[in-house]
Image (tube, rainbow, N blue to C red; front, side):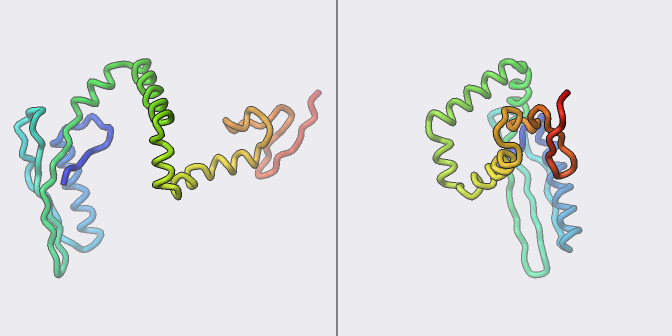
Amino acid sequence: MLHAPGFETIDPWQHRDRSARTLGSTARLRGLSAGCGVLEWNGRADTVPRLSAWAAGPDWRCDAELGLLAWDRLIREELELGEAALFAGGLGALEDVLTTGILACYVTAHWRYALFARYPLALHRTRFPGHAGARCGLPEAGVEVRGARVERAEIA
C-alpha cells in the first residue's frame, strides 16, 4: 500500500512514529493487537521508504507493507518559493480546474458532495439576500443582527 501523507514537512521516520501511535491507539480502543516494524530507507530521493504493519483480532490477522511517499523535501522547496509565487500557482491551478472541465467531471461523479459543499452558501444567501456584504457575512447598512433575528436600525 502506498501512503501519501498530507502537506506536512515531516520526514519518513516521523510518519512511521505517527503510524505506530495510531495503530496502538486503535488497538487499545478496539481491543486488538497491532504494531509496525522499523522504517527501511536509505535516505535517497529515488527510493521509497517502507515499513511493515499488522493488526489482529480474535480470529483474524492483517499484514501489510506500507510505502511512504516521502515528499517532505518537495514541500519544503515549494514553501520556500514565497507567498506570491504560491498564490499565483494556486490561481493557475484554479483556472485549469475551471477551464478544462475537471470541476464539472468531479461534480458529475460526486454530486452528493457537491450539493453538501453548496448547502451553506445557499443558506447564507437566503438569510442575507440582496446586498454585497452577503458574500462575506456582513449585514447591509442599517441592519443589526441580534441573536437569530435581523432588525432594521434607525440611521441618524
